[in-house]
Image (cartoon, rainbow, N blue to C red):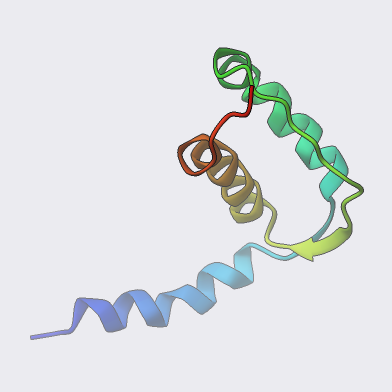
Length: 82
């Protein structure tokens, strides 16, 4: 019987070869994500305070997904100050 986990682990390098790292301007990325999550931000009456962010080389799709997920879970971990 084959171990399914080993298949997944072994196939990951092949996936990474297809998806190359790209230079991303995190400031531009945050603007795009803010626009896509604007309804959630307005609903929660949230104010985003974001400083200057770097340009980094990342796997673009995974990094965008990570930022979006982080922004969606932030309201659950921080209280709103009035």
